[in-house]
Length: 287
Length: 204
Image (cartoon, rainbow over all chains, first blue to last red; front, top):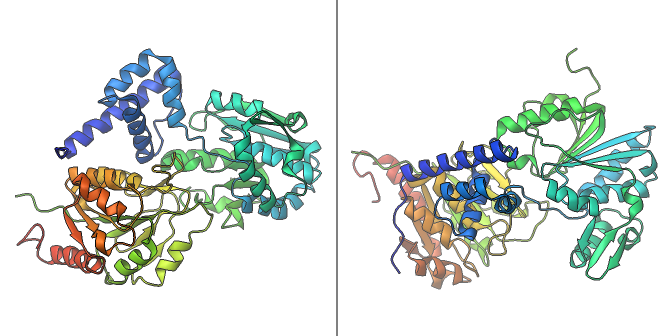
């Protein structure tokens, strides 16, 4: 087999321009703003779709995106990484029970925002945790995502049964007190989350890149979403979270995400560093 | 005359047998090694980066369990966290991603190699070590096509030869080296290159 030819810096530069044009086209036509996402991460996902769908250039794929909404939906699913599971990082939920719940118990009313909820597995996990801690009745959970398709799936709360073995294991390691099957009904090869878990959950679309402050929250969960953003967009979102949180409210990030590069570290105290639980300082930000 | 681009990073990938291979390579890199080392080892997801902790015992260079957006610095060893792809971003920071597994692996060697080849071009060395599947050979070929130097551990010195064999078969590899030669080769290549860049802007 002939070895494939060299790729010059100029060719790479042209490809980078094509990628920027694609993202601009998506923004102008469909309103999804990926222009400030991590370039390395975006590039890999776009190239994956390009190879899978057999396009020879990004420009060719852009042409298709502009004329074929069905194809855009396929690409969108690549651009928004929807990797999640129930009680993902069980140690986090365990720490949340032990270190955050005791504080929440002193509040008369609890507002929780899960930004980037994807297909909803983690918002149901939080609902279960709150129910077991006797807090569900006074809680309101806001689950948001940029992608309306995954939000529709989250609302349904129907998951493949094969995933439940892992979820059951996570649930136990997260300090679950019952059995995960108490919260769901099996039907054929699916599992449906109990209706009662949905009573206090509101699903809404919200784009962290373009939308504004979201209520006065006591807890914001945003785990493994910020890793896909570039640094300026991360800083925007940290500011947004700071403004959306009540004094003493909690911010929970993914385990490899950091406030270190946020430009906003001094507004937060560390509750649990390895599991990335932070708490907004009890002072006026502009005092 | 355009001089050789300085090598900014050495990217490495391994699966089966990787711990031994990495400890051998790292043990022979001297303090003040002038490039960043980034490595991927196939492993199961976990919140802890135990490999970084284990490898620190063999390395004179500081070993880092990186966070997202961390700056890539010369003379540091970055170990991809289990469960995440580790990529080089255009501003020479680390970008982590949970995008789909490649060759059933996250972290994947291909993901690191493609991104490093994109950002560093000639300024990266790709190394495929022992391993039991084909992850890395596409990415290594991309590094080759971008002008970077590509190395593979010799199959006969590998606990699992499939990974270096796949890369060699693909034609991606410029030098095949026994395990114990890889660290000294890198040290000589980088430090030699730095000292003699006016005379021999290339390999010795």
